[in-house]
Image 1 (spheres, each protein chain N blue to C red):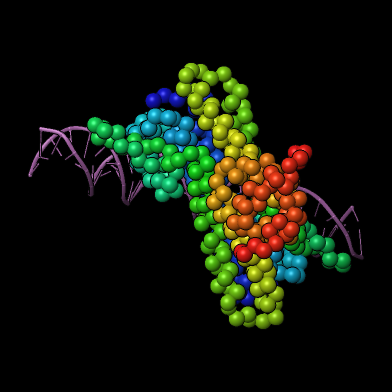
Image 2: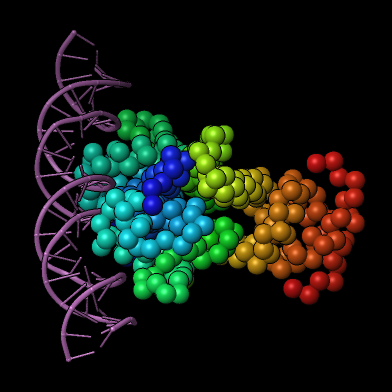
Length: 183
Length: 183
DNA sequence: CTAAACTTTCAGAAATTACTGAAACTTTAG
DNA sequence: CTAAAGTTTCAGTAATTTCTGAAAGTTTAG
């Protein structure tokens, strides 16, 4: 399995981006390689193509599976396991998003809730709690909203995006349109 | 400047979260401290409160300024500089979002565009370019949309969020409502 | 059961990233 | 101009993260 220059560039880049996206270089490279190949790849092929150790490859694949970005693919008559992307690009992007939310936002929300329950130990702490509350509410809004978008699915999301600045206008109309909404 | 237990917990947590949010532990702690204090803080006070070196503090403040999350605040009659948050929580959240987009998405979009221009070196590369194109379009949609949200501002965003699943319904109505839209 | 084919684990090495503190620099009061 | 008050830089060190490769583990064919 030797990579074309095109694939090589893309794989290298996704490796560099990897750490910014929440996983490390190798994991990013492995993901790119699997996504860009239509043929399922074995762990050994991946290790060879990327010139990384078999052990590292194994750990990377494990991590990508824990993110649900790739899945195993059994080829009849073959002993070894092959790997393919866990879904369309849209699905993968959602998974990354979701996973990052779990790591980057949820723990903070949870802590903020706890801190808001604590008895303030003085004047200043009351103001601090107000701030924390503000942060909490913002995070809550953002997560609620991002989940909403994920539920919409790609086509509707696309409509929404094409709407662009029109969203503002629609919002203004909304009350007239859905006056008796139940939620 | 000694921190109350409440502030300490929050600061420590934001430190831990720091690296997940794109900056390091110390930078996260400094930000939390500045945001939670209504009084402007000097570099020395920050270094003391967090027990970190003056040099590290200076670098952290510099980074936070480059992210536009804090700004200097001059106290008349005082020689030293003080620091305060660069805006409301909403503004800060937007800045973080924006900055991360620049680091995490823009470089990839740019590379993808370049790779799509390259002459494919074979059969397979054509399929690869199709994939890359798909990724590019998705990223483009996401960034366009996130900018849209930022322009809405917090109040409208809030309306939108309260709407929740209603968004889907509105989308279905949209064509009837804005049949002659120009964008 | 055994051997072959393959995978995973993990201790230590390598690479990367963050932090300290002393020296260099800047600004302002006098 | 000089000294004092403050800030920034950066070489070296410390801490953290990632990677390797050999050993241990697993599965299946026969």
